[in-house]
Structures are given as structure tokens and as C-alpha cells.
Length: 500
Image (tube, rainbow, N blue to C red; front, side):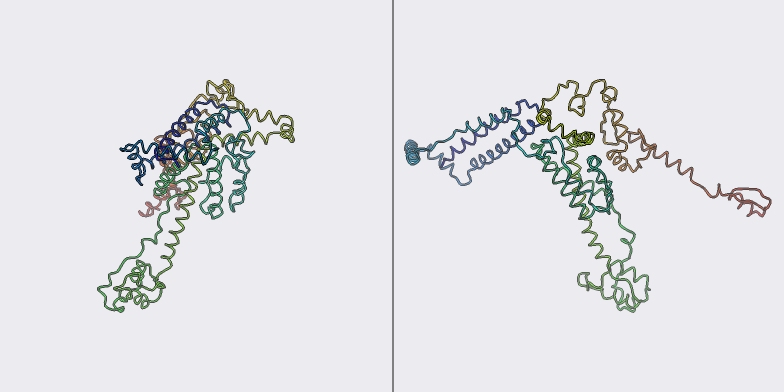
């Protein structure tokens, strides 16, 4: 067994070699999507090992059992030479007992890591992906899609439409969000988290979900979470007025208050308020000098039970809403893969019958090479076309993708090109911003991106609607005995003066 100081030395060496391996991994040129993902997974393994070594080293330095202190004292004491020869003797005896024992240097292990980094073997995979996922390029939501279309009461849609709207959970009515819907959310979130962990291994999902939890709590308390408006209490929640019973010595005196006053006092205590005058007075007089916990449970009304059930139901809806918030964040993280998936599915559906089979038979290896080809030369940072290559610059200028549009209502989100800018007015981000402002997202507000302009226009529209409202006194017509047509106000004035 190694000594405490030897263990510390080994952990220090391991930390330095790990740091060196991390630096070399970051500087290594990665040209394909497969290499990027494999490199991220190697970095994650190295970083996890670095943290583990640091924790062990910290424990040794803390020396809670005092063994390190004793070892240092033995090596630096008056008998240090005796201690040295004693340890040398132990080493020789160990090798006599184990003559063929070979200690592999730590440098050999890290040389293997370097070879793994430099290898060009395309079959090397650090993580498993399905064929549909294309080693992290696309999403495979077919299982989630099948679960979604089988939810009772939700409109059916095709797979391409689902890829574009699977995170539009705020559009689903609250009454449709049942236990079956909750199970679907668990399946969807489980896949998105698992896929994110495989594609972006360096991303800390725990930190992301902590941020989601914090934002969700604030929005939920304010009633601003999308798809879940805050419910206000009904009119019955504040009904009933308490009655001081200390001034009454019998139920006959309570009967003098009447049915309505006794009913109000019983409702204030969540007690049953039905029955005759005598029954109400008797029920209320029993509560004199007692706490509510001492009363018979059968005396309470159903409203109290409903209140408890409503609290439990609120916890269930809050849990579903939190799952939705986590889905929103995962969908935001995987925006790039989501867009690529939709384009890939559309491209597959556009092929003629048998074309895909022919391509696989004739050029299976070529398709693999295309997936692993180097990143194309793109100095102007142009968008990529369906073939994975930058679109022509003239097409980039033709579609106005060099023009940026800012929308304050969307949280100062920037849209590239007039087409994306016009389309965003009907998308969830703009609709949610308008809902937060308390303004309906109608055609009147097309091309309005500033909050101040939207509020002014909404005030103007409300004023116009009030002016156009039908006023009976001015627009309702009456006819007198001579056939003259006048409005209602004039007719009543003439009638009041006896001039008709």
C-alpha cells in the first residue's frame, strides 16, 4: 500500500497530466460533427477525473485521521535514516514476494488517450446514436410523436408539423392536460435530456434546470407562465360574516337574528348553512367556546373539502407546468438540431419511390463520407443549404438575410431577413409578448415591434370602438303622430312637454 505522501504525489501528477490532456484536446482540430461530439465526451471524462482527483487530494491534505502528520513526523524526526532503511526493506521484501509484478507508468495511460485523439477511424464512437439521429445531427422523436397523437382530445397532425410545434404546449387547452398528457411530457423530456447529454456532454443540465425552476417560480406566482393564467378566487370565497357568540346565552336568542344572518355566520365558519331557523341556531350555538378542530367533521360543508381538493389539484397542475418549462428550455438548447431534423425529413419525403433505396445500394459509403466531410469554407458566415454547403452570396442578398430586424415585444430578439421577420408575428414568441402586454395579437398590430407603439395603437383602437358603440338615446328612431322621425331623446323631450 502506498504511503500518504506517495498518494499525494500521484494525485498531483495525475492532475497535471489531465490538465495537459485537456489543453491538447481543445487545441486539436475537429473537422466533422462526429469528431466534435467525440472530443466533447473525451473532455467530459477528463474533467470528471480531474474533479475526482482533486477531491481525493483535498481529503488527504485535510488529514482528518492524522496519518499524514504522523508520516511527516517520522520522516523528519531524529531517526529519519532508520525510517528510510525500514521503508527500503519493505520495498525489497514486496518485490521478492511478487517478482513478476510490473507497475505500468501513468504516462502510458495518457499516451493511449493521445492515440485515441489522433486516430482517424470513422467507426470510432464515444456514444450510441440511432440511425435516425445521424450521430447527433438530427432528433428522433417518432416515439414521442406516437404518444402525442394518441392523447385523447388533441388534434392529429403529421410528423413534420409536430417537429415544428412539439414545444407549443401553451396552445393546448388546460382541460386536455390530463394524466395521459403528463406521461407524454415525461417521455418527451426524458428523450430530450438524454439526447442533450449525448450531443452536448459539457453542458450542465442540472444548472440549466435550476435556472428554469427559478424563472418558473417567479412566473407561476405572477400568473404569467404561458398557458397557465393565474386563477382568481370566486365570489363565494369572501362570503359570510363572523358572529360574536359571547353576547348570546341560548340558541333562542340566536334565532332572533333571522335566517339570513345565521346563514352568513355559518358560511364564515365553513359549516353547513341549510335547514330551519331552529336548526341553524342550534348548529351555530354548538360552536360557542370551541375551536373548529373540536367540532364534528359532519358539520362542515363540502366547500372546505373542495378547497383541500383544489389545493391538491393546484399542485398537480404546477408539476405539469414545470415539466413544460423544462421542455421549453431543452427545445431552445436543441434549436439547431431541430431545424436540421425538419429539413432532413422534408428532403426524405420529397424523394421519389425507390430513390432512397437506390442511393443506399449505390453509394452507401459516399453518404457516410458526406456526413463526415470537412467543414466547408465559409468566410462570410452564410447559412447552409440542404446539401450542407453555404448558399450563394447572391441568394443570401436576394432573400435579405443580411438585414437584421429587432423586435422589442419578443424581448429584443433579432430576426434575419424579411421573411423570418414577417413569419414571427404569428409565432409563439411574439404571441406570448403580446399576451404579457394584455393586447390581442390581431392583424391591426402587424409590423409593430415597439412596446410603446403597440400600447398607443391599442388605446386608439379601444377609443374607436367606444365611439362606434351604438347609443340608444341618439340612434334609436321614433315617429310622432304626424310622421316626423326623431331620435329617442328628442321624442321623450317633446312627449314630456306635451307637444306630440
